[in-house]
Length: 206
Image (cartoon, rainbow, N blue to C red):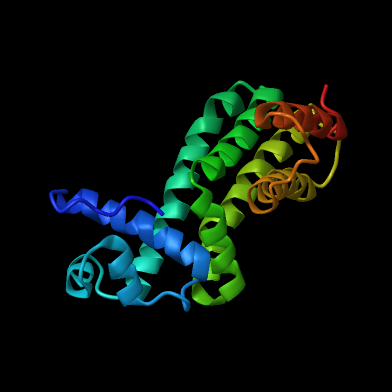
């Protein structure tokens, strides 16, 4: 669990700390399994103090989800843009794989939180799908379609290829974080590099 907010924190820093601690709790127990009293206790504050920043548990939960969706997608696009403009296929997919994997490795609560969101379903799961999952797939799909049109890749279903790429990254990271997987005994960057080479061969990259 992250460090509790310091009483001398600025309002913005306290808000960020609340979001991180709450995300870790939700990642462990899901939305329904966490009470506002438990949230306040984990933060070392009273419930009224918690309500000063977030009027309800649902508001807090939704804010975490919006932050996870919005920030990652914007950063993802920015990281890929130079390689997309240069039509550097290997660097494009290496950057994509490294970006997604590193974000999940740096914040272990992220994966578990998002899994809880998907398991609970409802509006939160739909929001995550529409604002992060689907746009991420479409971003990769558009690049693959562009390179097919330019003759760099073989004619194939770009949507299937995008799903294949993301499926590998998410599955590998899930095995590493959730099961302490030892099947691939190699550094993450080496695993991603080998997968990208195999993936590009499958696309018929020239």
